Length: 295
Picture 1 (cartoon, rainbow, N blue to C red):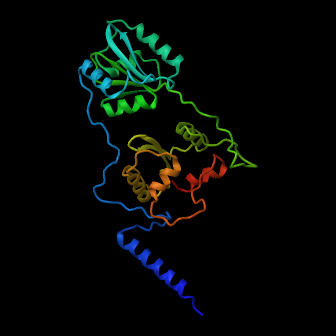
Picture 2 (picture 1 turned 60 degrees about the horizontal axis):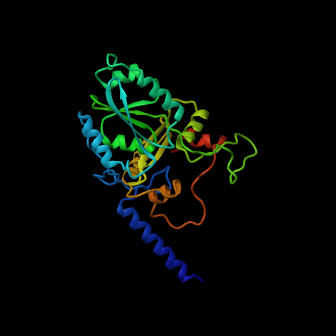
Picture 3 (picture 1 turned 135 degrees about the vertical axis):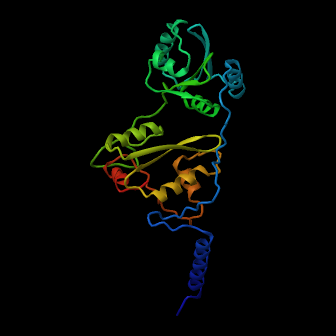
């Protein structure tokens, strides 16, 4: 005897699946969830497109308007004279390595007026004794760098800003997770700091084809997201679809990190009480994810 309720349920499921296919969901051979790509999509993270001005006073005035320097105790504005020119540091207290900043400032104070170059590029080459240095040309990059940890330096006479990435994050050790024990292989695991996680993967996969692209999501949080893949093995169409989906996410913040990102990317899946995302520590099996061409 045929159960009429099971037949009715199967018909409903078939009709819903047909509707999804008609709406334009792409069934990818390597992805269990289709990603829809719209025409004319733009990034949902609003960015400040204003460029830095050649006027030192206007740049500092705008920075003081955007950053709550007087209200927030942890946003530091440090004024200093470099080579006879007025200069201002902006950084977050607690993110900066004190020893590194002390040595950098000592080298800046020893610069004379005759040794001051005409542009920021030459200043970096001659007078910045640090490795991770970048020149910024718009306020979106400056504000994002200050709030992320690097120190940003404005010098009178230079229309660019100099970012010094001498930050340090409060982080726990890369110990083995309690919920993911292993009998063989390495016993280190992922942590909340994204640079530590990418370094752990680079340590094990010394291949120039391993690419780690940095993007962001969340209007308020501006959470960093690293897309990791092997350039010679990844599916290019899937990669482009994933990038576009992340760029067009309408989110204010990612509260649960990778779980919030997964729920935002795959909204229309049927409810599944079982864990279907492979979240695990850095083990020998984790390397096979990249080596097989997966994202």
